[in-house]
Amino acid sequence: MNQLDAWVAAAGEQAGVDPADIPTRLVLDLARDVAHGVVRPGAPVTAYLLGLAVGRGADPAEVAARLSELAGSWAPPGDRPQPPIP
Image (cartoon, rainbow, N blue to C red):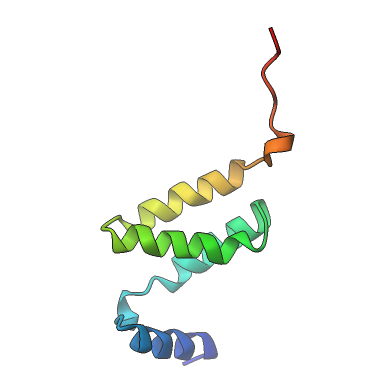
């Protein structure tokens, strides 16, 4: 068992979550997409949002896919094309 697996198992136990129910790779991939495509501090916040959605019954893979897609197409508000002013 590597250090990450050991941490996830211990943290899961402390949080009352079966480590087998923790999609570690899915969360890490989402965090990477947000850190690289948006901003690094957005990664843990987005992982938290994923957890909230899953806690409310959402499918983790579906939510992660939507968030990763958003991160991949993200442009900061100042960089977004503005509609012409009439």
